Image (cartoon, rainbow, N blue to C red; front, top):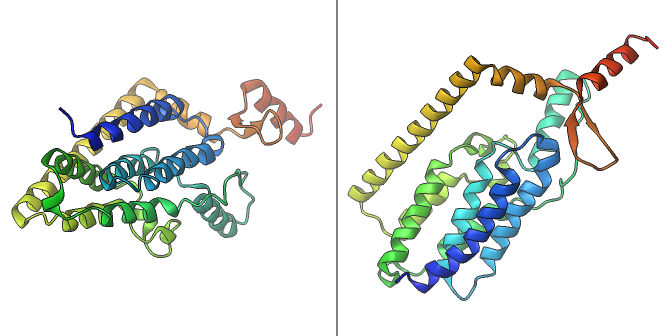
Length: 252
């Protein structure tokens, strides 16, 4: 029989993951998805923070929601605005991007994660099934290395201060994982990261062969428009693009 805290965590995560995957398994426009994507992650983290009566549920939910932040390779609104502002100043050309969500407090994600890990009891007070799940969470954090480059000093997510690998190590330290087990953990993480890179490369090669990558890049390079003010951005259709080009050429 599962430990009660695992049952509670799984009940929440099952609903969260199902809704998240339904909405964001495929993202056509970062402009349109950026704010709601990060808002959903932040809301999940705040739900974890609210689990004050059970530090196990709080830590498990916080870790397994947090890793979603690295899955799409999409910066939160505040960091994205900073990045595009820097590009605009360098290139001296305006870049059409959505400023929606720049006040979203995504810095609460690492703060809640740190609080949840530090709020765990000592290792000898943690039941074996819960300990195994926490180590699984640490593994997920360590493998989620997508945002590491953005968190460095001077980069867009520097205000986070720490990447997910830091929090994985924070948990391992808290759980007093011995050197041998830690070496095994690091080896497993390295193999998973290399496996993920190999799968991405294989997918890229397959996309280049069947032409889907070229089509995706062409779609990404098309000008974006809104159906209405504040609505989602989408690539122009062939007809809209031709009309825009005729207008720019001064043709009727």
